[in-house]
Length: 247
Image 1 (cartoon, rainbow, N blue to C red):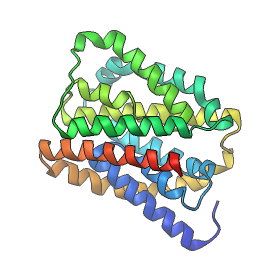
Image 2 (cartoon, one colour):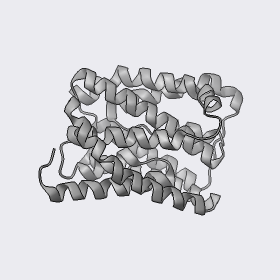
Image 3 (tube, rainbow, N blue to C red):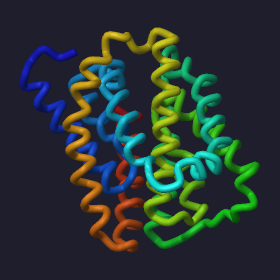
Image 4 (cartoon, rainbow, N blue to C red):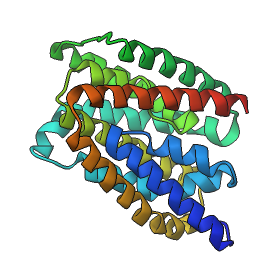
């Protein structure tokens, strides 16, 4: 981890920004933080810093009214996210995930452009029984290989036409589950040292500040503005994934 105090100030600023993005759009913390921290930290160190901020902020966003009902609805999806992550984490440790990241980036850009153009795909609730587990497995496989949980879980949850706050909570459940599964898998495989826990704990405060500020903004904007922020964030994340894959 960096010893220079100025680097720690930069790290804190990154987590404030990443937390604010997540507070407004309900996602984006890992991608924003990894992209900026990667400018001066090795990927493994950046990922280690991210574990606790990502896990805690997702738990905070996931909490709300009727949590048992939400988990009962999502558990097949979440279980398969865990399974897929454990199956594919070796690609991140031993392989080169850049091509997968590039593909994810292109798909994110296309999906976000369709969303900004007001194209809406809807999935009737009766199909959740089979679509949820398949989506979870595919999302987990991509998350374990690339460290990014976005596709296809974000389009899937968006297609369920959930109310805004319930969508944020459902996304947080998925992101938190993926973060925990990925962290345990990486520690088990030797990809992250246990000594990374303290620096990750210190990153919680700036992340929480950014999340609080972003959440206040989200509650004040209209549904149409939220839709534009949501898909605009996806577009930015997709472009960033493509840029990192080509770098």
